[in-house]
Image 1 (cartoon, helix red, strand yellow):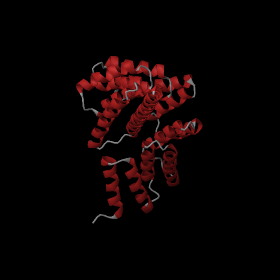
Image 2 (cartoon, helix red, strand yellow):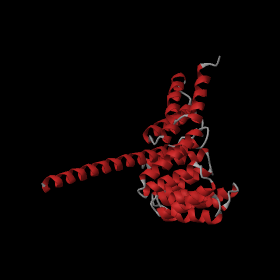
Image 3 (cartoon, rainbow, N blue to C red):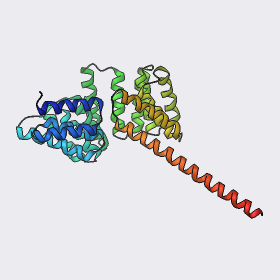
Length: 297
């Protein structure tokens, strides 16, 4: 018979593969009651809360993981102990804490690609373009050493500028990535989703996603992009139907995405509101028609 710790880890793995972050949190809390000095548990809790956009809880757990490593007198297991927390600080607008964190991270993980990326996002967000460009050049250099192709580099730069809220540059790099790999469905969908999600050019975004859906009609990511585009166009029932289809396919593949869940909920709410408005309008119309008949007598 397995000991309780092993059984709970198996439950966590099952939840990660087939359930949602909510179940993972439940099992991780059970494990934490057995061992409250395991930084991996805190890290996994932080990741689960982040997946649910519960940023405050995520920060608490990521910070607790780092505290345990500090108490041990050892560096974290991997750089994501820093970069995940840094991203949460960034979302919370806690730029000063984010920068202090990266200074410590740089000592433990020098020349790390993901850490350099986060430094660049932070510097751009603070408006320090001189420092940001230094990190961007370093990012390009590290990527070249790791043999990333030009399309991958351009896509990474697009994400960087998008995170920093510099959307013109982000779009420029998404288009560059697509020009380098014009038939790559991922590049097509990336640009399409960006144009839709950021309200840059919804009609063009729809044209792009329709192209990739011709290639992969049951790809849940592409369906999500189209459904979100239909929502942006005010076609709520169509949006809901496609987002629901995307969600059903995700569920079959045991892939949970909180953003997709929120978009589906938005579409469902919009459909309900539209029906309620329509019913109310018909009721008023019926009342006025009946009133006109009475007056005519």
